[in-house]
Length: 276
Length: 364
Image (cartoon, rainbow over all chains, first blue to last red; front, side):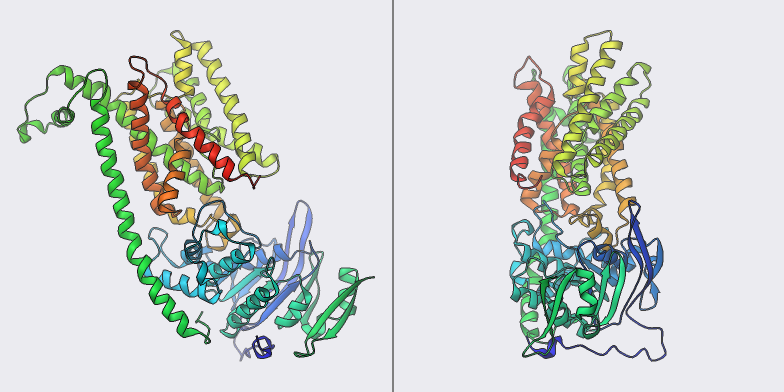
């Protein structure tokens, strides 16, 4: 992996048109009387990777579901390339937005190829089966996610990391303009983590808007253009890696001491933690 | 999304090689399976009708059918004697066809419930729908109005389904084992209700009646039973079978289905109500026959995979043959004694249930 692949990119200039990419404003969502997402704004231009950071229970997963349009916010709007996601039909939305959940499993003996073909459902008639074009898209998605070798395996026999790649491939098969991921590097060894982030960078290079929840702050510093830091359902800070991943911002949120070192070869921040 | 630039040659080579093979194979293979299953069903029905205390040749079965469809004249067939004709047309054929309709419907219900609840143990019997439907049916038996029976059975099935899902949900979520436990509770209560209502109202052999509702029986099947069961299975089964791609979307859960553009709550409500209607129609004619909705879908999945578009119709066709043979065994193996068909399906189904429990042991 080279520096180049992971370097930050300039957002394409709006040029007078309404801003492209993801624009979410004043999102609010509560469950059981608890406000889980409280007035959150997220902006993510096309061609960039935005990291969603925050401690456990800070509302990352809930926010991703709101941004993906699978949950309707109590207040606020989610726009993709200027279109209100909650005003479009679910099928049209699913052709533009894909969501990779954390730990999605099944007990059914489904093969990897069939699982990835599910991503073609929004693109094909519900009465017809998958066609050759769907199969091609599914195989390309498997390849892009580095999961071609798993094609004929059953999903139930895969390791956590392999399963994660299959879910990523399923999302890619949707050929989305916006892809949202919930901690896609979970369960992965370091090499697989880097490979996953490289896939996301390549997607961004193709003009896709990528938003991913991440736990590992150094990984966010390594691979994201922008980061949004959440705590208790609110945005604490948003901006570039250099603006947000600093001790003054992180220490109150995580309750630990943070030291920011520099990667000797990339010059990017490497974060070290000690108990405060 | 365009494929990444690096390694794009490798991408192309792999995709062209792989696309042709499965794409060319899967559709004709699906058609072959369906035709084979349909042929098996026609053969099963033809042969099952000939079996019994009085043996008949298969030709007589078709002569009787032709005679009643007024095709014997045009086909130049001799008339069948009244006795074998009555045996085929009045006694055995309605029974065999009812078994086929019930078997097909229950298998389709099983597939839909397993997909929607993501629970490999879901079927109308284990989740209490069948017992609920039985209870609904026996409550209105005394009224003597034919159409009321399936409606009351549907109401019973729907209430039982709501009770099972509500109980499992209140107990902390719809995990497979919790849902089955809740189904067991609902099923036991409804079965007790069936026994109570029959003891209270029945004038004939209460025990026999109770047995045929709780273990299932198609012994008293008439052409009305055929109309209700086969009609409901053909109409509702076709609607459910058309929902294959929708059900596929539920493979990785509700959120994943929503992300694939499925209106999750609406789809689930509509499909589960259709399942309850179908279960009600079937149970009103046959009582609660267990395990058909469990055994068939799993057996078929082992052979053809998980795609619901093929799984639904194929499970239905094979479920029909399965119950035809289960019922034939029930009335012939221990002749002149006849055992309830539910005993036969349980003999096959309970070990399958045990196997599924064993296979899913790592997940609560």
